Image 1 (cartoon, rainbow, N blue to C red):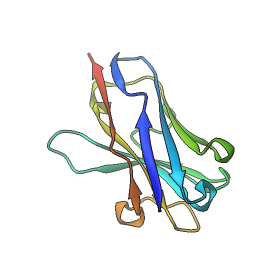
Image 2 (image 1 turned 90 degrees about the horizontal axis):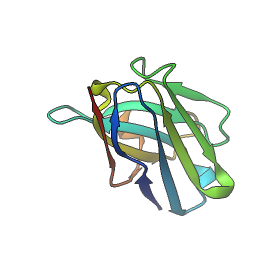
Image 3 (image 1 turned 180 degrees about the vertical axis):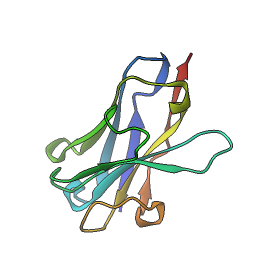
Image 4 (image 1 turned 30 degrees about the vertical axis):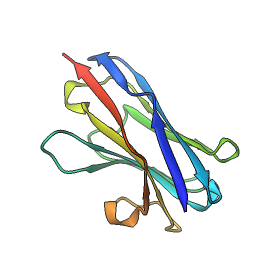
Length: 124
């Protein structure tokens, strides 16, 4: 089992940037594909980004391609989400998650472990 704790959320103006962090503990971090998801009020949780165990493969939702970057450092047991050119529609609670799958994956049900989330609010 792995425990995940997100940080780095906050209030930012449209066009601004934030970097979210997710610290992992428990089973070896490098065993897991990691992902970021978000959930806006009244909406379902949606996939944002995923990264392979070694960082070799990544995938993004179309809505964030070119603006968000996922990265990881297995030695630090941490995964990050760099967010640039933020828009009001990016406002949501952002969650990191760990999947035991062997390759990057996007469906929510492929992720077994979840953090508690961190709020990102983008003002217009």
